[in-house]
Image (cartoon, rainbow, N blue to C red; front, side, top):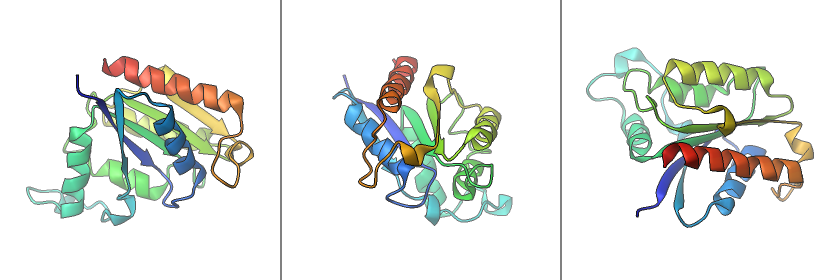
Length: 176
């Protein structure tokens, strides 16, 4: 049996962000039946423009869509910016509206931020609009994340660690 392939996306462009640390921890928690690809191209996608979304979209958009198509599931871990979804993440999702890569795609959504509830809700609405499959058990809000991840990127909160395992388990259960 081939491994389950999960595409992980950090909504933060900073490589050492708390969100990237959480993704790294989840990849460590996974057993050998799961492989992760970490998408690092958010900053390279052009601003969404419907005029460019034709038969020959920009090469970075083609690569983004291909990674989504080849994944069995998607995991997003994102901060909240100005009470909403980070612009680069929203832009990436906008590039999939017409092409449909998220339709029925199993997903997990983790919002890890100072508060995060507004961004989490906004992102769930966007994911609903693109018909992603985000089960309730595969959603997690981690408020005050900086008190739960140390400067080395290690998660120091046992409850968060347990919740991350539950999210991963819920995502895998939807796939198999």
